[in-house]
Structures are given as structure tokens and as C-alpha cells.
Image 1 (cartoon, rainbow, N blue to C red):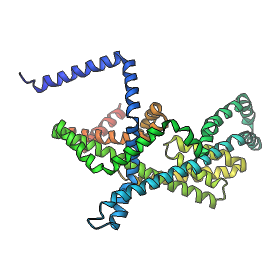
Image 2 (tube, rainbow, N blue to C red; image 1 turned 60 degrees about the vertical axis):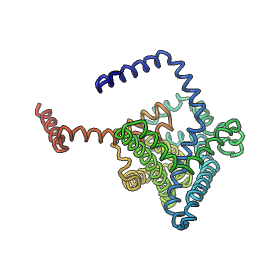
Image 3 (cartoon, one colour; image 1 turned 90 degrees about the vertical axis):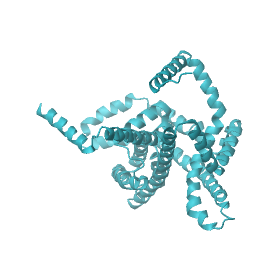
Image 4 (tube, rainbow, N blue to C red; image 1 turned 135 degrees about the vertical axis):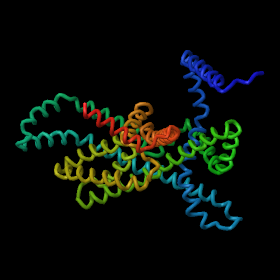
Length: 398
């Protein structure tokens, strides 16, 4: 049988992929149903992999920084991964308990207080506008707009969303256990699978490499390995640096508000730290909620809080986070905004959280590809800059 040359082989691949895509769209409902069933079947393993990824972050720390220094002999070295895994799970469970019993009730309390005090905030806002000669002319228009909105209905919807059934569930850990009784098998399977993955992670890595290098050419396998390594380092760096920088921001807010004698210091610190995980949108929501609550106590302190929080967020965004993240998450602002918008529209809050490391991976790979292409064409970075300046100059001449 005659072997296809490279050109015909590529053409055949394109034709086959086009046929598959055509039939996939033609039978889109069947494909959707099939994917739904497939995801339901592998769901415990997906959750297990996600758990393994999260647990692996502190596990690596315990292995390298703690237990490798305690267990130094050949006989006891085998205990390093075991003790590291146990310590990581204890830390993870402790974090979940704190989140459910401390953080979530605090957030629910903040939202409840906001809803209860919101009418007072509107009255104080109108009084403030009336008492100032520069804003007195706008007071009547503001009053008309406030009266035209059905605030009661809006606040009831917000309250039901944050502190209705979900809020009650979060406030009581026992209610959560009862509510997830139907999925206890999935959770147990995912947990066992994650433990298996973490204990055998070195062997699984070797197995994965055996499969990749046996199926693909060396150059392709090297690229797959490179992308996998880049993906892991990007996500790990993002989670570690973001968690630590958010914690530092929360401590800064708490200490700063205590020094400035601004009320709701603990509530604001927790809300700001958690909201910081959601880029752009999260800090804005936390700022608005806390400003309204503080405004009711003192409009002046509300303004002080806004100025202080903006300074603290700038310090965190410009100094603390870059120092922790290094160059791993080095995305231009436009990429960050676009990735958050796309991730949020497709997958909600989860999409917003994972969009930045995914965009960072794509950005790094795209830059590497462009560098190689430009090197082949013998075009230097200085030439690109000169050409850009010339184009800009010509446009200005016109």
C-alpha cells in the first residue's frame, strides 16, 4: 500500500475533522445528551482530580519544607508523602470548616445588615444632598428616582438569593451534610480517587509520559509536556499567590480600619479578602456593601474607608501580588479584562476565577510561537518597534 505524503496526509486529516464537526452539529442534541451522560459518569474522577490539584499545593510545601527535613534516613523517607498528605487534608478540612462556620455567616450577616439598613441609607443620602448647597439642586431628582424604584421587591430578591435557603444552609454545617446525602457516594469516590492520585502521583506521571511518548512524535510529546507543565505552574502560582495576597489585603484592611476607627472592621476584612478572588467585580461589590453600611454610621468615615481601601488595593495590586506571583501571571490589562468577560459569561464566577491562568497559558504559548516565527523570518524586536513607530509617525503626518 502506497504511503501518503505529508501534504495529502494533512489534507486527509482536515477532511476527516470537517466531517466529524459537520455530523456533530447535525446531531447536536444527541451529542449534548451523550456529553451529559459522559460527564455524569466521570464526575467523581473530575472532582477527584480537582481535589488532588488543590491538596497537592500544600502537600508539596510539607514535602519540601517540613517532613523532608524530619525524615532524612532511607527507611523513613517513605513516610514523607504520607505525613504530607495527612497534614494537607487536615489543613483543607480546617479551611472548609472555617469557611462554612465563620466566613459564610459573616458574609450573610453583611448582606442582611445591608438590606435592613438600606432604607436608612437612602434617607441619609437625601439629607446629605439637601444639606449641601452644591448638591441641593439634585436632591429632588434623586428623591423622585428613589421613589420610582420598587426597593422592597429588589431587596427581598437579594435577601432570598444570599440569605434565604442558601444562607441557612451555610449557617448550619449539619444542614449541609443532610442536603448532600444524595451525593455522598460521589464525594466519597472523589476523595478516595484524589488520595490515590496524590499517593501515586510520581508513578502516574511516569505512566502519562509513557502513553504520550508512545502515541506521538518526540517533538509533539515534548510540546504536550511543556503545555501541561505550564498549565500546572500557572494555576498553582495563581492560586498560591492570590490566596496569600488576599489574606494580606484582609489583614491590611482590618488593621487600617481599627487604626482609623472605622466600624465593621472584621466584617469588611473578611468580605474584601474573599471578594478579591473575583477580579474587578468582587472588590467593587465588597466596597459598595461596606460603604453603604459605614455611611449609615458616618458619611465621613464612609469616604475615609473608600480612600483607605483604594490605597490598600493599589498597594496589593501593584506591590504585594506581583511580588508573590512573579512573572508567571504576567498578563496585560486588556487580556485580563477580556478573559474575565469571556469566562464570566460562559461559566459564571468559576469561569472568572479560572479565566486568568488559562489566558496566561494562551498568552505565553502565543508569544513563544510568535518569537519563533519572527526568528525564522529574521525580524528582531527592535525592528518591530521601529516599524510601529514609523507607522504611527505616518499616521500623524496624514
